Length: 389
Image (cartoon, rainbow, N blue to C red; front, side, top):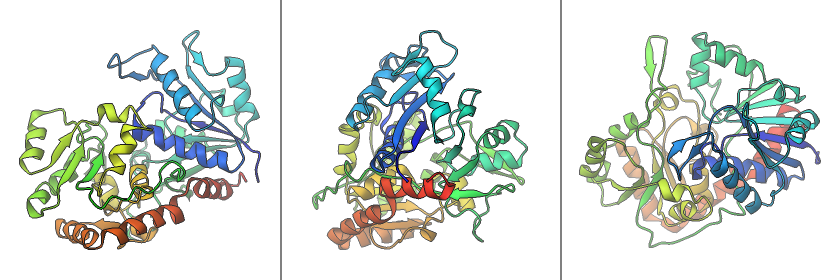
């Protein structure tokens, strides 16, 4: 069914970096390609980060201009709104009255990332879907009786998750009696085209090294959020191979920088490139030989099946991906173009396989993106499975 009015709630203005931006742009592009009337909306009380001022601020000028540029680039120049709730004159893109009308007239509201705590206006949307892109933490908190998570889930009619291994025999995530619709990371294949370069040298990735404060204790065990725990498990990998690695990361501590560099990891800053999602951010991926990356402890130990949006961009660019195993092999084909590793030996074997027949693995990477991650296929499937289309 075409012609639905779809409101996508998100936070790409609040966090105007490449990864967050493409997370939303791919959903928007996929929905628009299906012929729907698609709107992107940020409407929350959380102050945005302004990279020019290098601070979180109630000045929304950078956030709103970032949205305007991105939405114009994907052909939805007049289909966005940004409002800092509770602040007079802090509504951009459309008037406040139009924004209120959008909620009531929508056919479906997709709260992507679940980053927006729904208020009375948003609850007027007749059909609300929580699109959980970072699985496990919410489930552990809910199992611990967290009221904020309980209310967030209750404010939606459907919970859709990137945890595509939820409910499987080898998945330890507590589902707390909820029924989940499975979805996955869409990628805009029109923008992320294959960029074959046999001379590309580095396996790369982009992200944060250390992020404190989101660990969850459940069942007598602590499940960590920060990826540095997993990077440290594979810290000696560059010493065991001639394959060079480059990480677009900026660890805060000199000790973390020294540890990575002393073990052979090449570090570059992700900051400026991530502020240019259509240019430098995309170019970094396209110039890579492939991606090598770890996952959060929570997803690894509990085998959620999570797979990242960034991985999807690498695959669409024809770049083989070697990713830490979270159970995603139950959904995606592995062994050609995409590899799941649990040990350092697994990772080295995957990298050797890629380098032994690089052209074949690049083709396989793109084929996986086309078959499993194409934005309009993913968006259409989600709408159908939640009963909106």
